Length: 389
Image (cartoon, helix red, strand yellow):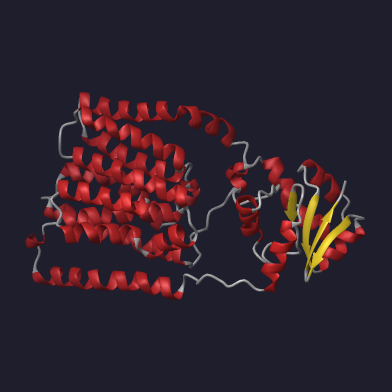
């Protein structure tokens, strides 16, 4: 449904910007069909972020439309979409604010006030959720989360160098074809600064920006790259530039598809280990945790936490996003495996703090759980279920 709505947004605003149907379809596919988007939205299923980007499309197109026009009452619809973005995905909201700040810089007089008012209305509309979130944020584990650093070579880190570079090149042609407009330069200047910071790996050390994942930057830049590209008047450039651009249009999709084929893994078939774990999970009656010697030494525990909650109505003391727990809670959660491995009696103390009375273990972890005098309730293959009163 989100993809369908996304195409409708691209179609409506594409027609408004006098894009051909071919350009509209290309815009949609480049944005939702690139390698990073496929990996995150289709394979990993990040629906809340996808929903935020759907609202971003409307918000951004409104801002881009009023970049060249006087602000009227219809502009204030953007505050509704910005408010939805603030609630649904905060990284997307930060980048949306960058674009809004660009509009603020180029407007004068009352129009400047209207841009600020739009931001304030958005904050007011989302305040019922946003204020408690901000007040509690600095007591959560989110402040200790370190995003991938600038020296890694995964798909995201390659893209965080390539996409900003592509943005700089595209903006150069866009700027030239717009007669080196000062207004265009100022509007996109905040975005270009953020792109430069990402390219240099500095965003990981900048307040607020350090909480925005590289993938979110990439979607943001790709959206603007395609917009600027379709707005370029290529007649002002010689044939050499046109050939380079034509070749680039062929190579970039091929590179993106190649990354999906080579880097993005296929879905993995269940083995006996997964089947046994699911059978053990069905026997859980209380609040449970999965413990093993290593974080990824067995089947992926976080997947079972999701499966158990969705399909079996099972409650766990762990989960997917440690960012939303308190620092004290996560510190105790993180030490469970260490205490188990070292036969440390503090294991029981932490389990009680986490209100957890059932433990799923694997292999040697099962033997260690016996040493704590926990009751073995069920065992299948390499997987065991223990409980305590």
